[in-house]
Image 1 (cartoon, rainbow over the protein chains, first blue to last red):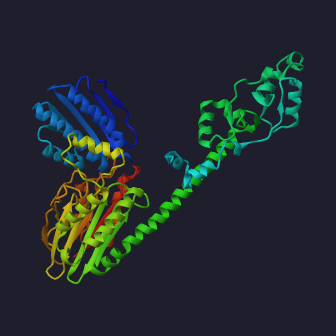
Image 2: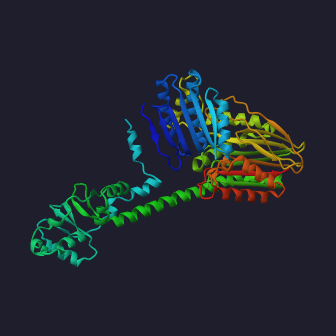
Image 3: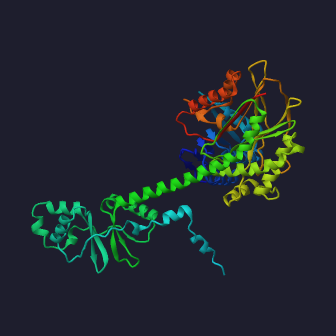
Length: 128
Length: 426
């Protein structure tokens, strides 16, 4: 599958999904008026990529600093996809969760993710 | 057979304003020349009418080009040009490929055409024809900009007026809650600040003989769609919180959940395979996935007992002994959303209130706002610190201190969400 790159805008994040090397980056903020419209094509590509590989290790670098409630729900679906994949292929998904050392909101959300998606290996990274 | 496409011809409101303006609205009647006329005739024409920027060249009613004043003048000003060109056909200095538009073209389509054709058209103008391609007159870039700006301003005015009035309606829905709050709470503040004049945040208060019911609500979305949601919730709340279940906030959340899911058809059918993606496909087809995060509280004023049930919305409180901020943690499911099961049960938590205790409820608008030097979220820690440093002050003063800190933190960052904050001293 071709790699996917979308530059950041004011209300959508930078998406850098290198399917070729199974390295996924997402950075910036996500509060588009219509979150489904923005995220759905991305989710579909991720989903079909996951179907095309079996057990290849995936690294996900998550560097969002803000996401609205609609985006939150869609991000949950994204983690659900990855969690399913990791369930079928244990220890295959590593989630690097970047948060500013003072950002308790993003860290808190990450801890929720860790609690809810137990097949994904979680690595919180505090940045200064 | 009824032709469904006829309905698409309906024009109303905003689209109507735009439809009133078409290319012919910009029509200026200007003198023309024919290819048989000479450059010296063109020069005379231009000399006689100083505001004439361009002259169309017409051959049997059809435009074949456009002569621009400056280009023509500069061309003719060079040495020997008069001798060479005076008697020749005026097509010598004509632009053979000007923008030509039909008189019924909409203003928006026209603007894109003009921009596409480059700077030339903004300067020289463009030719307007009738349906048969026969010449009618010229349009200028300046007139186009004027009309586009006017349309923009007019649309803004309509949208703004409409939202201003929507705001009056939304506020009037809050009035009875405000009145009840005023009766049951002595030292309190209720800060309600939608991001876009109307919004998805909402509060509710209802007084009973033995206590009061209090709710702070954050519906999905903000602006107009958010406000729609609050009206739906307000209607349900009024029906749900009655004598018999006022003491059971968790039960009220469960009823709200069923009502919202049913009303908006937000039911997830786990029998169908790829659930998540069906859900999104539905959203694209107009299926909503909306609901609310909220805290419901029942305060029994006879016993001083507060019963709280939260859907992703915590309750903060400070006791009378130390300035430490405590929280009652909410359940992590929102109300009404597709992935919240129809029979989901929230939990009631109880808190014994003592005189002087301070309680706070907030939607995520404050805590999640991006700002500060690092451009990160305001955060619970910062919020809690503000509460603990100021809880002894009168509530309205606390409101002002917290909001000032918040505005300062937000700085030049865009407001991300609606903001609601309730504080009261028992």
